[in-house]
Length: 357
View: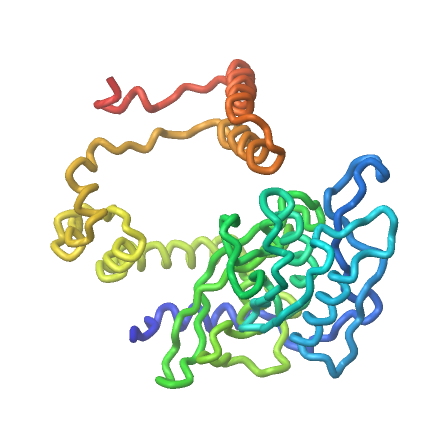
């Protein structure tokens, strides 16, 4: 068990101090929670493939998070009332069981759900995830069928930020962070990795504080914050302070060999510090040992125009979500990139690499 360095403890204390005050969290009982279904694109004249129903669910004060999840799932399985919406979930699908672990809702549906695959499965997963992740204590969803994971997914833990077919949250993106909570057995601080949804206009500091206020996902960890704590606002006083904190973190990370070794070992990456490149412990890691033999042949290709990444992403979405032929999608991608490059004053740095030829 590793103790948290005093530097990190001080940083955490400073972050909590950034919150100007705390107050009891209150739910918006007027708006309630929406139910997400597939929209009839022909009838609506385009728009999102997934849309919210006009029917909203408003929990009463006595309902737990698990009660809310159950109620929302039952409404989803019942289907929409609007003619312009339809359910992506197979008819006859039933809720077998559910559990809320930390902030993850674990849903087990009947065997009918296992009939889904490809885009149909993605759409059904997205509708459930968008609906349940509105709850303040749910930020991730896992869905099984008859007790088994579905092998067709690239990930079994779903976030609302993963939905590519709805513009419900423009600018939403996931960030992975380490949050520190009290270990109920040892009494020491222990890190827990969580994936947070960062919304447009929301700062990382605010997202971190909100996650700390919501507490750990692991039942063996305890929050050090009061139960009625919530974030009202947060700010970093000036850019210079923000840069100073960031530089301190980078210096701490780069100067600490033990942290460098742990990072390289856990992530199977070659050390950036020359003094660690012959370290026996690191070379005992098979992937690092292989890299060490020809690391000088690896290069950073230099800056690349954004059109490369943008159009490659479009090509992948066309292939995996729209069923476009791979050769056609890649040909279209190449044509779009070449068209953009023709208008840019861009010079690749890759030919400067001594092994380029």
